[in-house]
Length: 249
Length: 313
Image 1 (cartoon, helix red, strand yellow):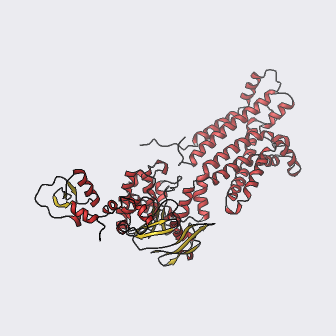
Image 2: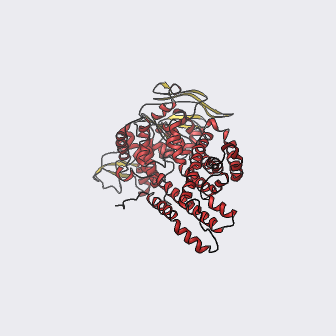
Image 3: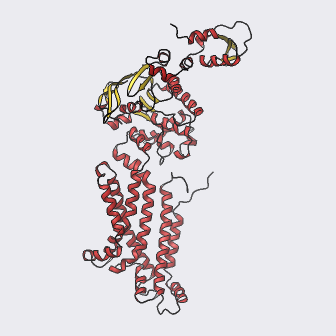
């Protein structure tokens, strides 16, 4: 008899609960940071609670991440179909360019179109985070085991059935790894959002830099790092849940 | 059942198939035999339209396959390749149920069928149904591949070196199992192999190919007795007479026991080749033949074997 298996996502859920609960302890952060930085006159960000900053940060990340997945994966699928083969080199160059372009510059360039607020930040982060998803999806879909595809074709899978029932499930591990990389990257980079009026954990960091208050910088940076680690771990667990057929790690 | 008429396949200047005509009767096992690059796999793949011939016609049950929808056609033909190509993301049961699922069978119906198929190829469904392909040995994977090809009960099977990737004892075992299944199921089978022993063992007829052409198409006994071309003779090699004896049952060569106690015995299910080998091993001129219970039922003499082996008319 196997021990009854826990759902693989219950631990990450508890993790998120604990971290957000920790962020809600405004008093604790104030005490901690004033101990570490006794000279600082305002050791925590006062205009917004840490919990709200974290939630704003996650909202921006989720928005950009969703766009990345909804645009990146279909683009890769298209570029690996017979009709889209010509698209592939162009796509690879575009997403590579998207990542080499500094997100801060994209932010400022997007300002005239999206105005002040989170929308421009989401767009800049979307362009920045597109590369890992597109590249991984392209490579996964282009390098599927030939014998499996041959067997599938020989058994009478129609094109669309091949895609949904064979190709995407087989490419899923590599696609998910790309999504994980993208999301963590976006979450960390979302700290630039306040430059165009977006919210999030970048606020205390940028405010702290402006007035040389290291306590604020530490507050924001530690929170971002915690969220990034938690997100990475959650997505790794989600991969295991979605790919039960893979060799256990 | 399957009929190929002057099938040609060109890749640029290279002719992989140079006008192959072949007829496979219903319920027969025909092997496409030949060295690598002779076109046997290409020929096989024209039947389920994985390859479209440059010229010529392929018919199944009298119908030109080009008139049929290729996806529908393939769902009606069992197909196994050497590397099997099991779907790593599906359980064994789901793998076997693939074609029934494509044919929109209900879930209980296709799962029941898949379990039945697993049992038929000798894999206990309770043990194997829930496994993933990575948890199978090579021989087990081959069985699953065969079960998958048989699941929708197609009248035609295309097998491309299905036992090529397993070790020799497993291969022989799988061949025996295949022959047992075939005697029940009576499928029309095209079987690609480069293994002469395998072809001689399982075929009703052998189509020996060389550089895109049929060299000889005959029953194994005829092929081994009368090689028509120098290529066939060279391909069959110096042991072809022994190979032919491996197709001969002992029943026709036996005489009644003569009262003497034989020096060595052999079961009556053995082949003439095995009897010959035993005679050589024991250095005697006759062998006792025993039934399942070990009772002496007859005698086989060296002279009878030599007469059978002789190619003199």
